[in-house]
Structure formats: C-alpha cells, structure tokens
Length: 290
Image (cartoon, rainbow, N blue to C red; front, side, top):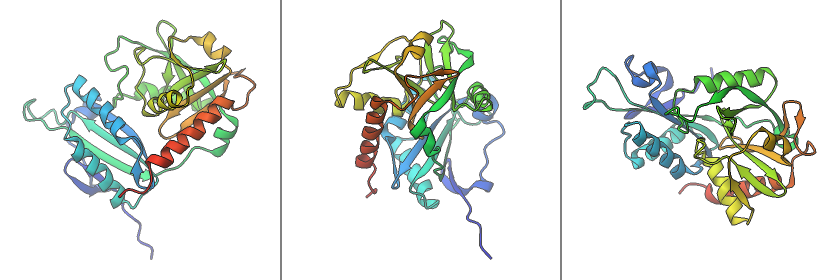
C-alpha cells in the first residue's frame, strides 16, 4: 500500500503537517485581512530574488505596523519548507499577519506561515502565441491605503480574475479612477512602442513587483530604453507589443486586449529578447544552493 506524502508547512516556530496547522480564531488576518503575503518561485532549490521579496515584505510591514521576525529567520523557514517537502522547482507562499487580536497590542506576535507546492507552469502555448487580457470592470483608487502593497485583502482581485477566466482571458487589467493604466490582478503590465519599453510608475501606485523590477534591471543592462510614465487605454491599443510579469509567469506575452489585436498578434522581438535575458538571469542566480 502506497503511503500518501503529507505536506509540511512552517507555522510560527515550527514545521507541521498541513492538516494539523491552525491559527487563532482571533487572528487579525483571518478577521480583517490585516496581513501581507509573498508568492515566490524556486529553481534548483533556490528561491529567485528572495532579497527583493523580503525587502517588499518589510517595507509594507513597516507601513502597517506589523512586526515580522528577523530576515534570516524567515529565509531559513522558507528553505526548511522546501527541504521538508523535497521540492526544488516550487511555488511558495509566505503569509504574515498582525497576529491574534485576543492578545494585547504590546504582547501580540505576528503569524508567519510558509507553504510550498510543486510548480505547475502555465501552458507552453501562452508563451508561444500570447494570451488575451480583458479590461477590469472595477477601478483602482490611489487613495486606498493598501494600494501598492501585497496585502491579504485580495478578494476584489480574485473576483476580477475569475471574471477574466470566465471570458477565457488570462488576466484582467486594472485602471485607476482617473483612467490611468495600473496593473493586472496578479501581474504588472509593460507596453512596447517604437522599440521603447513603457510601464506605469510605482507611484501610480502599483505593486512593486519582483519580476517587474527584474525586467527594469534587464532593460538597463541591455540598453533598452525604459520609460515609466502615466499610460492610458489608447497607449495599450497603440502598442506594438505588450506583456505581463510576475515571478510565476515570468514574462507572459499579450496578443489580444479583448477583441483588439496587439501589434501583429504575434510575440514581438523585444518580448522574446527580454524572455531570453530573464531566463539567463534565473540560470545564473539559481544554480544549486550550497
């Protein structure tokens, strides 16, 4: 009889079986969505851009007065989960909440949860032919205090993403209340026009995506002109190329915006160049961990 492997997670101070992990019913993340999360990807047992993920986590934690454990402690917890589940190429999630509301503010300890599962990549045809995106029916409010942070208050994003999937689209693109291009539900957005790379500025605000940062660094290294500026629907429709980024999808080409064909409908030269450079960077940074 084959024994089913039990998934291990790291919860607060130890590794536990996933079916035995539990948090307080008064946890602020459960009750109020008062938490942060990071979605990460590992290659060859190495988490890509871990420092960037932790930089973003600590920046947001400071903004919302959540006190995370030390960086080294969190990094060790992440690798303990990978090792315990015997994973090398994995999708990881780190969740950090403000902790149980039943404790006084002075005594309250944050809740730290790290999980890891085998990576299930996006279909190869998405990268070969590009994907369709739709325009999100909701709007992003720059005055919303959680905007630009990766919080666990993600319900509106999941609603929009489901609506996109119901229309056989890969992603829904958000605009601000004043009609500026923002981001996808789970991704950042880039446009290419006349060999220039464009993306909305962080101050829009949009999430400071780790893959977004990586693409910007690659553009600088490869002498690709990068412009961060306010963009609108007309810029999207006039683009020669467009793509999405996050650490799981890496660089995902967009071939259609609803019924509109982007460029000639094929994956463009700059997108292909950036994809290749992204893969080379991963290869150099994520060799086997010592």
